[in-house]
Length: 203
Image 1: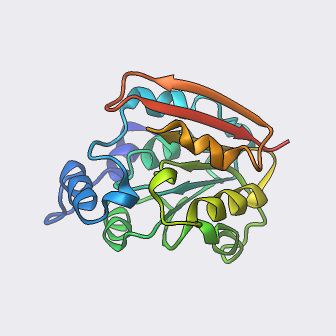
Image 2: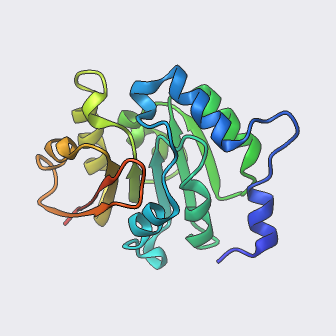
């Protein structure tokens, strides 16, 4: 676990940089289809979602749609010193915000599409990911994008790895079932709005 001083350095906010809440709200107003919610995920949702990760077996963790880093910091706190977190977002403003506020050599913010995850991690020297997390609103993405992301994610995960998905609509399971046979499900009621949680395991 990270020390309080290390966590403070990661969560620094330089002068002139908006607060996470301000940045998240601005991102929702500009890209509501891609952000999907006006309120960041709750601490309880984060703990539940990450609770099934085997951190000792995690060398590369990938997140789609990191936004203002609501999950990034808890992931970094749990990750091993030699592990890497790659956060992929199409929103230039979010990428710049993450680069300005998270100072950790294990963290890389990448502007790009989750559908290109295989190329993105290969360019950084990785053959596969151990875990991939997504809060992208699959049911409202442009036609064809959701299936492309699901297929690319399955191909990129190592055997035994998992795709962690939190959504407000159960329709996301329609994107998972063509690729994953073992899918665990839970609900997080202490979130606004309540969220569907999925862990799709690659056998």
